[in-house]
Image (cartoon, rainbow, N blue to C red; front, top):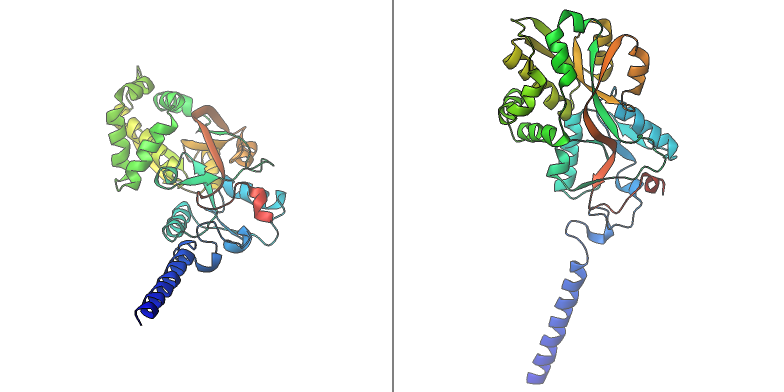
Length: 306
């Protein structure tokens, strides 16, 4: 009897260990090799329901994403319109659940600091190459507001500068406070923008911007500098890309520091280039494209057609 009990215990232990070994090879919540953590057997197209989560329909990145869908033959794929906030909310939920997702992304952006993400390779260059963010002013601003024009023309910062403001906003600070905190910590840089510039004595200005986290950061910094250093009264107008460019071109808006060139806002520049003053880049080294969590087993937009 003792021998039989020992044999039965050994067989039971073997069965338990075998079961544990089998379960260990399947990610939690991803039984049966479903996609989740990127190790599934389904094609990526099926994993994400042939959907790319985008932002507002007027954004240049959406045009590039639609171009990618055509360039790479992604039949039956849908680019979901929404907003920057809706896109990051969907990304956050997918990552918390360790589910596959594809979004339109750009840098600088705080999401690259918060999450482990990667751009999909774009061999057909649907999204173009490296971009810059330019400052664009209405015609006549130099004569009407020379002080503001000078500061806007001098305004230039780095991706790290922008990321500091974006991260502060993401952590809960109001954009105005995050901008002022950055100014307080970077007085030497700000002084170069305002050195020798005359005060404005309460004159009014309007700045246009799109609701991208990057442009919220830059516009609030410039607004705060013009107000605190020169005495302007600045109104920041949040609009979509088309109305932003149209406002500056028509003279209803004085300037913007949110023009992504040469690709993202290419159509708007071509349409309005004779009606605006392009003051050049205020930030270099930006990028746009399709972005996925690192855990997804995919490296190129070409893989989406498989």
